[in-house]
Length: 215
Image (cartoon, rainbow, N blue to C red; front, side, top):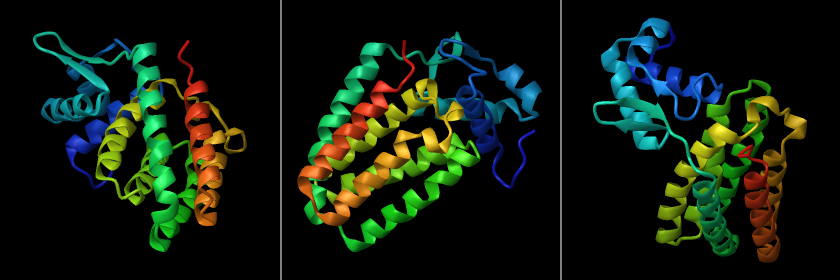
């Protein structure tokens, strides 16, 4: 059973999500409440609530009278989400370059400094959290509410794709492009170099998409 002073629903959520991250539950595979309950010792009521949460996040496809299944995003859906995210983020960082505060830069530095440990511990959930916070600091620093709103939504969707198709669990820290590119983006923002900011964000977006194991 998952241990820790957290709610049963949170335990169930983490248990199922980790099974998806570790490829023990794959796209189109059914998430069977009874099996999860037997494996984890968590009540089916809590598991059911956790599955609803996974459905809201886009990881589970809940079908009435049929059950819940791990989602199976199409290559076109993944491509379109990343294309839209790339467009919005490059424009957001163009603005953020001139508007970001010292406090926001300090927060970004802290996030970048914390990233290596997630690789050493193979904690993909922690990396995704740091990654989302990093990108959202930039989105909010643009001071454009629409950019922040839609980038937030696109981050949620793209994180689903990373869980399925990113090689984080099999990539060492030294081999990772993500951390190096985050450092380059942070440095460009510190320098206030708009052209470099846009170039680094565009490169980061393209690399993230191109390294997904979709095929």
